[in-house]
Length: 88
Image 1: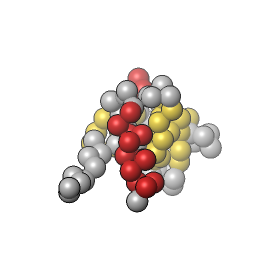
Image 2: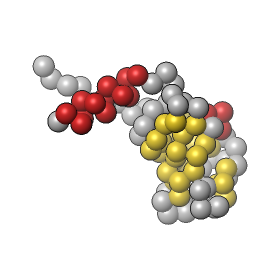
Image 3: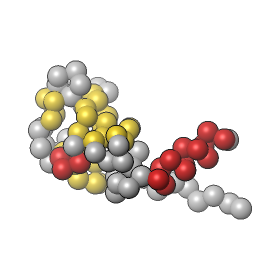
């Protein structure tokens, strides 16, 4: 439970408008970390945020499990990850 609290706290500290587990689409062609070409319009999920939003690691379903480091200007938000409400 402590780890979950620390993770949630870290998420609140980000100064970026995009966060972990947000769904995004590419606005420009990008090359994945495995050198696969990802065309504009490819949809993926943010799995890591660098330096408060200077760059994002995005996982794409095609090619299977492709990861790419993407600049914020090359992403558009599709769906915001909204954490479940906590009960007191």
